Image (cartoon, rainbow, N blue to C red; front, side):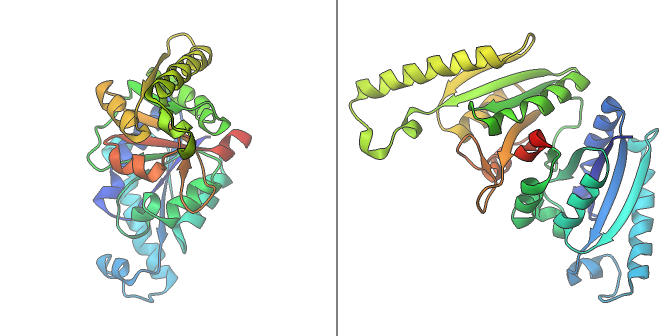
Length: 290
């Protein structure tokens, strides 16, 4: 049975991923797999009432009790829920768990205690999305709970951005949401610094880029999908469009080349995550080749 993996760290923030995981599990006929990876952070041990250096059996028992209690939460009623406890590096274990079974999504919050907090803030996020083969759905604490009615997918014509098409369409089909395709045109970003000429040249370039972008989206879109080309700074255009159209999810194709998660759109996933006030779905480029 396909499943949705939810990393938890015993914090209320991390548990805000549960309503989304439950909603998706019902829409996609999936089970929910709750995972806690116990790190070697002594502060976390003390907060959980476990003495640093305690035997693994003690850790497994305490964390197992937490996961068992969490699995009986009302939002998970009627779903098949499994649990798992690991000790070690969060990203390594979540990746191993996600790829060991038929995982549709990894759903987590952008801020938690300890390891989960770093999923979208540093090296753990980098490692996870760079090597995973499944989409990662990141929920910000305070995000509205489902249903999903509108999904925004950002495209720039590259294969990396287009790897988000399949997962975004699958999510839209399962939830009944309308898929919005957005392409951002930024003429200044298209020009080398040495070739910026008169304003007329820039205006002509802008018109050419707009026309090409419109032709691209018109060809990429399917019946029932909405598409639009806008000009401006990529990050601002994405977040403004999502708010204006009340999109519930922002979907982005990503790759992990370099030290940060870079969008094919020329910005960083981390920047969009900080600026966006709604759920973000990151689709690793590897998922399209898996």
